[in-house]
Image 1 (tube, rainbow, N blue to C red):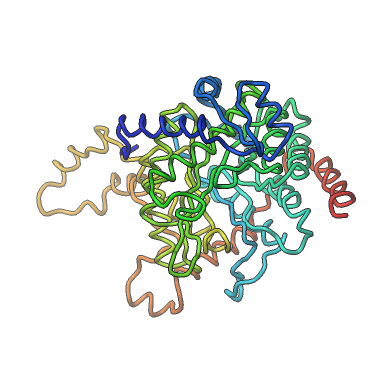
Image 2 (cartoon, rainbow, N blue to C red):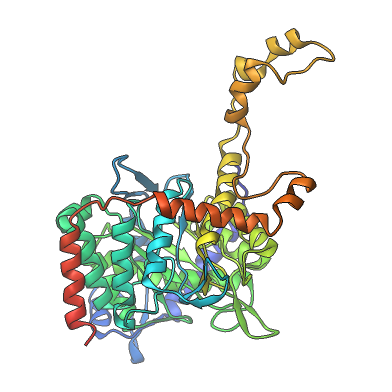
Length: 476
């Protein structure tokens, strides 16, 4: 795997020193009285308005207790096990939060439904290039209070892959969703042994942990499930305008959550998820791709590694409103740089429009981008047979290699051809007509939905019982 570094050792030390200084002298507000009291009892300094300051020694001790690696499991017969904290990058889908979808038939943008979510999760389950699957959209046809709970049921029932991106907004969500995950495996003891879901909560920039987010972190930690701490400031609005300033703020926010979790449950497996958001000051839009954002995310992975904590950053997104050339280059460029930084994850793939929109065919198109990247990362084999010296001697000058058994054998092993992209002639393109690229994607979507029906793995009646209880209580 190729690797590059943005930050020097001096850069890393300087940024870390500033992070520790702000945690000690400025602090982070915790709008959660029980958490404030707990932190006070464990060495933090509490000021008015629940502002919590963290002595450097407290931060360093917490960092020491974070496991350098942890495992994330699938529920399939392959016994999938992903290692967070290693050198491999895993590809995931999900995190479309806006609840809009480009209709497969009409191409028009409309509110997404629970059925849309189910179909896209089935597609992602069928596409082998995705190592993990996330919530593809926020369905509009269920009550808002049940949206995340119903989406979690869709994920559990329609993929056996590890579930990475799943919004958990408050304690109610956390309780029902983790109860479903545990019920699938037969209880929390089994879930702790083979966690397949990675709940997360985000600090509200700048420097505020709201009660709902702390409730999610607390419940996840107490259940013993690997937990992800997120910081997502908007550059120049809720975070500094400079790249290095964004790094400092994000790590102040994330480390404040990390210290709380490690004090609450020492040795809890966890990861950091720096998620910088850019702003288009011409219109005031939030953006998820820019050269600056790519640099910040790559540098944040380096900084997390320097601190010894598994760190992943979100890439593979686009500000394009439709599947387009812009969507392709934004996704590919950001992903390649994060691979160079050795992020734990790449993704979430399958979204458009600053996380606001998705489409079934986009998940297939993005899978081809991921497939190309994985092909490059695998490199090529150098053996006596692949060096082909004997073949070159036999063929000699001016002859063809086309009819050789060696050519037929090694073509599928070393040469990749697209299923969605078009590499044919102008004559073929004219005969096919239309947008061949999108047509190919839609055909593949239809083929997957016609043939791939995931077999539910685990206690699905127990999952349904939990969701039915949520309908009786939460929806009211």
